[in-house]
Length: 543
Image (cartoon, rainbow, N blue to C red; front, side, top):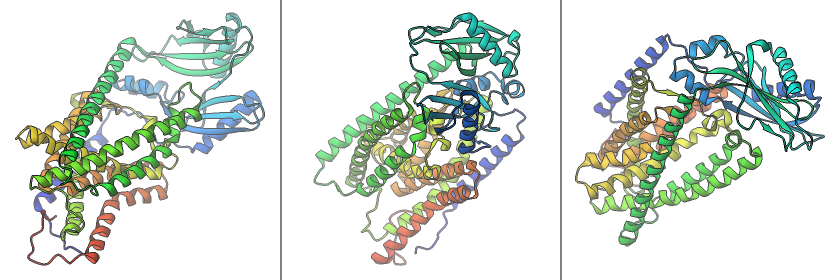
């Protein structure tokens, strides 16, 4: 095994990163502003399903049903409360009864096939809403007077005062052909800024079939949010466009210099990427169900998985081309950035690349924490929970941190190994060659639920610049490990929110995994290759 040689510069950076991270965490802890609850439930999904079944048995005499539970969040409401500084008012007046985050239980009665959705408060198992998914009844919709009477009866059962609610009109409140009716009532007191509590009641021709509580958000906010999401979508498409151009450039150079290209390069990393990503697509089945909308959940989820697997294969092809072309172009320049297994110093490069990666990851995490804090304090940055990206909506949350390797392999290959050398062909400046692919990379991250969206572009660009210079100085392996270590730490910590001792142990294992893999590769390489002799200069700097 290689001996440890500490790089004082990187060690200093890691200490700076730890101090920054600790200082900002301390400032967050001292903050007097309240925060909305995170996706950290107090009950299990089974408990939520049991509560939903008990409710259906009491109200609809459903004695046996198949259930499926997903995590949901009122993202638009959460964003409005944060943007308008209304969190304190919401927590004191509404959060216990109408939480932002909750479990949604889908139930299908075994004997009749009737379908229901029941929303459960994931902190105390209380039912906060429900809906029977009725088809066309073939009967006339309920008349307004009877619907109003049943709605007020339900308000009293919910502990609300009907006198404090007034009916409001909304577009498409009735579908007389299907025999369904929906009525809305708005609370006249205790508004949250311009938002008011609004109740939705659904009816068929004879009975109440659904009850949902929401908030009428002002048009100024929803318009602003739509513009933000549209801006994020445009930046994502621009990023995809430039990434496609880079892939076409890779194809051009692979064909042009095909005799000098090593086509075996990248096969293993591409296979690892493909295996993990396809596995993750199946692991995301609950997340796809949570985003099914009005579609049949199971059908929508499987359609999404099939489409994602097709996209994943196309992305794997692009990754392979980036690995082959990037490695070849750097070698043709006489500046190899990625050693071969058969080279004597390969094991040392992997081992020291891992060490440098952990030190740099700590530095980057500290910088990222500073950027988040500065954004919140100076630029009113806020984020919301996204059910499609939560460990609560995964079949096996413990597999989620494997995606750290997918992100690191693909992004370091495309935007560092290939991207930097392509832009160096167009510009002589290292800074521009590092900056431009970093901006392209950052633009693909703007659809994360962080607002205003331009702040995400700035944050990820800065991280990309750091990784770009790491790549230029230390090579592809170090950049790969720095990215992997950073994401492994963040994703490993995300498992801690699940609360179990096993989840904590798995999270810690993922944080240590880059070190274990690098040690194993270095050991195996040392067994199969001549040892690195004292006095022989390594190809890349030590730790």
